[in-house]
Image 1 (cartoon, rainbow, N blue to C red):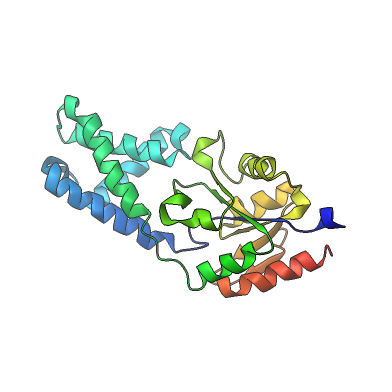
Image 2: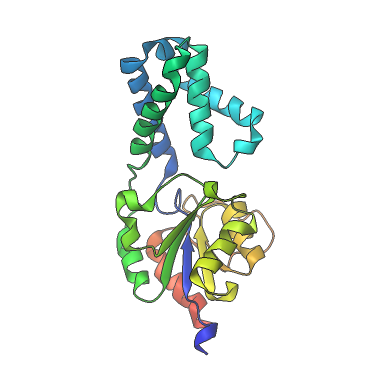
Length: 239
C-alpha cells in the first residue's frame, strides 16, 4: 500500500554530507584573524586554542546553552572581550560583527564526493529534509533546492537524540515514523535517536568505526555513493 512506503529521508549535516572538523578549524582561524585586525587586545590576551578552551568552559558553566550553539558562541565572544578589557559600550556591536564573520566561514563546506548527485537522485523519489543540532542554514549554500525543509535544533527546546526534532519533521511532512529513514553519522544523536522514534536508520560510518552495541542501524555505509542502494533496499521491504 502506498501509505506504507518510505516517503521521507531526513539527513544530519555535519560529518554526514561534509567533514565538520576542518570547517570549524577554518572558521575559528578566520575569526581569530578578525580579532587581530579589529580588536588586537583579544588576540593579545588569548591564543586561538585559549579562545576554544574558553568556549568549552562557558559551555560547562551554561548547560542551558548546550544546544543553542549560536548563543553559546556569542556568549563566549562577549566573555573574551570583557576579559581583554574591551569597552562595555562596544562589546555588543563587536560581538555581532565577529559572529557574522565566523558564520560566513562556517558555511564554507567541502561536500563529500557525490553528495550533490546523490541528493539529486534521491530527490526524484523521496522528500528530503535536514535535521541538525548545529547552526547551519541550508539556504546559504543553496541546499534548499534539495531539501523540502530543515530543522535546526537550536530553535527547539531539545536537540537530537531527543524526540522533538524528529517529531517536528513528522509534523511538517505529515508522514508517519515507519515512512521515514534518517541518515546520520552520530550513533546516539542520529541512529539511536531516530530508532526510538520508529524511523529506519542509515549509519554514515565514513571512518570505519565498530558498532558500539545495541540495536543495529537498518543499514551502514562508508561512502555517500552507497546511499541510494541502501535506501532502495530499505524501501523495498515496504513494497
